Length: 161
Image (cartoon, rainbow, N blue to C red; front, side, top):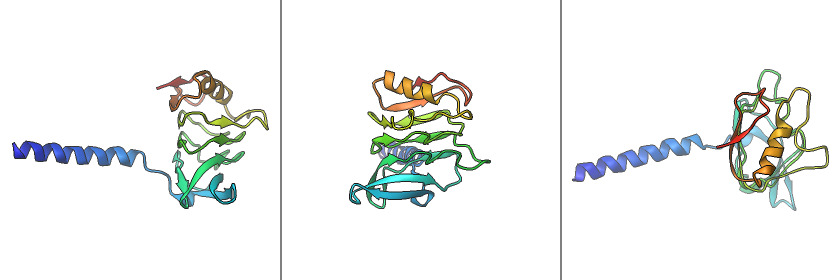
């Protein structure tokens, strides 16, 4: 009986480690930031990393990440296209063109994120397909938290998983 309990405990620990590794945030050094709201919150200005999969941290320098600035992840590098992003629940506002010129097929996003209307919406670019559809689909699902996916980067149809 002790062996069974020990084996179950070890399996639980290993499974927990694997799951937590899958949600690890991208390094803070990958982001150029500005302190906003009197230094209480962080806005991401741009991305300096080299990964196609980005897990935006919920906090940088112990302050919540609440905004993503216009063009922060747009055209990161000519040879690097983002494919997956995880936007934490701390993010409340995403400016226009934040993720344009990429090949994103999966977005994990929190509930109630607002998209800036200052510049025609989230992302509109000749090089970007499906972003207007993502924004509309997210809104039509009552800005529900979850993972939104599409078949490939040329698809305009999103689904909520």
